[in-house]
Length: 368
Image 1: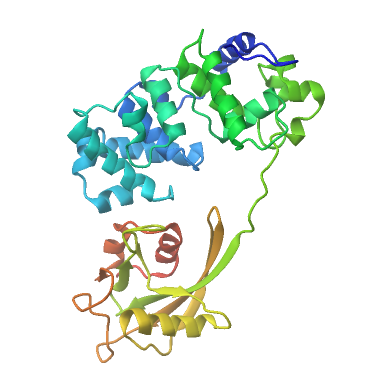
Image 2 (image 1 turned 90 degrees about the horizontal axis):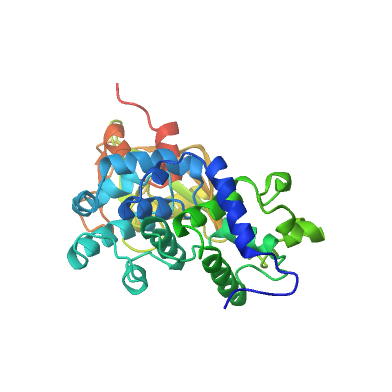
């Protein structure tokens, strides 16, 4: 049944205007030159919670290294994580590789088209599935991300939070109806583009919007109040201490656990401060608990601050020079996690969290 409500704008007219606007104003993005489902899948996973300007060079590099499902499936885990460096949320990269292997094993090397098969792949949710289905296969599936939510909340003047279940169902209906007389792939990208370029969170460029007088929020003067935000949880602030352990030529790194935040990445040893603990005391405790070593004379070289979606972390960075008479961590011993001694050049080739990459670049001396 076509969408209708008192005062509702014409979806057919809105879709036509949007398509005309997109044909003129669409950005020249590398994934828009293909309908290859693997390439579209890579771009959509990269674009999850990552800005387009960051994704463009990363996408080009990724497709150069892993141009197809087979290349990605055969790569080592560390190659995949290193190629993802700078994009954050590293589980996305590992899920892409798992998906590639499953597609080769169960789907004849072709990204599946159907809902059930696509949604069964690791890390593929309703939005990513809809984007791949509409853009790669031109199927009438809705892909509603934050940009599209904002556009539709203003277009329909929705006075409840966008993520409410009723609104999500409504958005899906609206998008599918707009696709009826238009290319689903083009309409999906046009809605995303409108949110990215015109219907901005702050200072929206309403004068350049193709919807014009069809937008209910604009005609009612409520644009600045839409979308209605959900109550936000307070951001947790974490303090931690880490050590650059060096024997003068190499540094000691350990691998994070295979599950959880930043799984399988390499990092400098250390950990969180406990209540009432100083950064130096926390460093000594963590190194003894994790590595069984006692350090003295460590020098604080600075701090690194990094923000994540739900928390921020301040890393207190110490340099600890060790010599042969001291007990150095032995990677061949009984350490809980994989670890090793690396030259700075070797360390740069390892996948590391962004804050640790900053530490490596700023405070690890280059070899002579």
